[in-house]
Image (cartoon, rainbow over all chains, first blue to last red; front, side):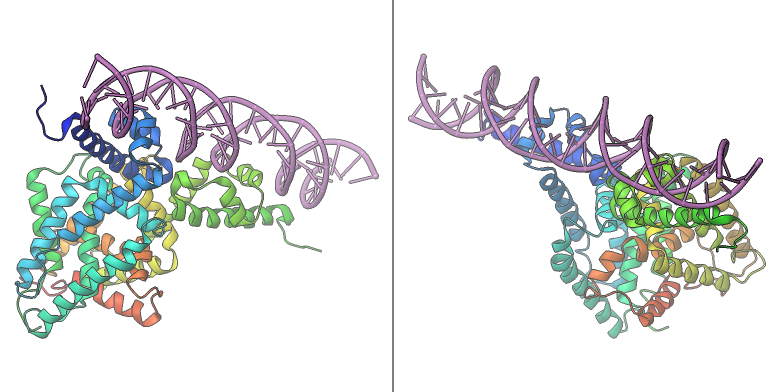
Length: 211
Length: 211
DNA sequence: AAGGAATCTGCACGATCGGTCAATATTTTT
DNA sequence: AAAAATATTGACCGATCGTGCAGATTCCTT
């Protein structure tokens, strides 16, 4: 009955792989690398433990795939930061996108946070290669804006760090934020207010040249 | 020969307890709760594993003590935020103190971050009782400043979160910050620059009334 | 339809974990 | 000095972990 070109096997491979990755992202986020057992990931994915090992040969390999996918998502979120764009629009859009990611993919953010807190034992090469080049590039863009008088003088590096920290806070610390919100998840309106408030706090003065 | 009033045993109890707590803070921070083994904590403290169990009956009890001490340190750091103080001085001092703590006690910050990321399985009561009351109090203070025209209108809650996130970033993500700093720890000058930059970014507009 | 490739899964092994316990050593009290 | 209280330590146990592996099952190719 199935007329897909690749056949049932290939289609299933993609589906099962995706389900394992999704389960792994959640379990790694909620229990940490050591606390996350393959059996729990398998149970969350709804398959036997041995099947997880079949698709990802080791726990570490599975973990590395999870972190790698998150890294890619985040890097692409900053595409708006280019020399030709308006500082307020570009940085504001970046904050909006990162807060949207914090809302929709909090597990990935938590996995990354855990990895960095523990001094990147698995993905140190990502930091030294891709992240460093990416950061240097974005800092250069912001510095150019400043040199062109498009925004006031502010440390590009620390501004980037403040944006990262303040946006990821709503993913990594969502449990604390929720507890301080009477135990309720943010509503749509509250997420809008959050985006407006974070942009207001961090981008004050950005957009209009001079002090 | 020892003439201390409390005797050798009592003196040793305090010293050994402190050494275990210090070692536990570091190991919990670098390996997470599950990844931190009692034997590694014991080895870091320079005593046998059984001795750790003798002073803190369970791993969980030891962990709770570590988190509790960190919580106390942080809460006391915000003593400057009172209605009678100047907004810029109070919030600026808070940021300075938190960044100083990020520099001197990064392990504690990491332990707290890990605990919250994993949804506070051990210290949820701290969040619901002490942290909520503390936060409500500080938000009320900031709101009063705004009502009095001492600072511009900004969401007190999100401003607090931005301060937390941007300061703790330099503790929790110190490994990432270090990697992006050519692998070197921040120098004294760089820490001063960090304090100035974070205050500049977050407190822009605070201190002078009106929009 | 048949044979081979790919997928799935239960079982077992060695390692490590948190925690118990009894024996010993040290300090304090009587 | 004897006895009691406290502190230290190594040996040990049941549970859980990641992972290897052989056999069963399903799918694809010819």
